[in-house]
Length: 308
Image (cartoon, rainbow, N blue to C red; front, side, top):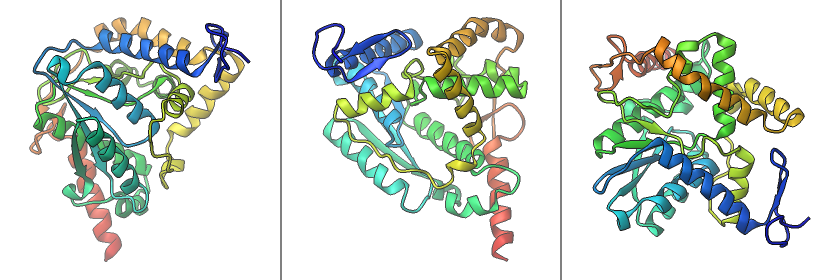
């Protein structure tokens, strides 16, 4: 199998467009699409700070590498990596080391926040998640700390490592649940809200398999450990559905996201973004209290009852 461009040995076959690519041209192929997506989503000026949420996994590490390659000291932009320690024994510590090492080697500012600041750990919360998946608590707490740290360092934007698979799954989940209003709020964010650092998604058009291959062929170190609580996530059902669709109809993931992008302007008109206020904790919220505070109170109460 040879590369269709240069004739060298190919490392992949892109089913949805029928091309064979060697490692060099595959990396160029991904680089070009990611940089185009970044330019489309945000406008950055000298003196700006950009934060990247980095877990140490393949997606977030590729996102960090890409953002750092586009911006950086040469154009007067500071890149900051934010890592969240959820308090999962044996799972998070190795990935933190990987992120810290990458940041030291590439002159990127590194920030570490922990669930322990909130008075909980995922290892203490997971056993009490009777009505919710552990991922419900984890996602809310993680987003709270990421936003708080990005706000604290004065970042204009916060990048996440969501790839094409993640986006297609999110669209499907909200369609099936009939949560059209939540669909309208999917990132990237176009409206700047008080207290909420706008998110952008450099990898939203890159399939997960390509992100993995990019990390491998570029020699990027990443953590491939498996969260002990991932199997309980509702998203897994939609991951299987979307993967089956892609297997039968190559390009299905692109079609799902493309259809959503076509509908998005209409969703914005029908469900304009709410004007947010600040919760007592400092986080933005629609109501009088943010979801983070509600779940944190619930978690602490259940953990306390379990100890008793």
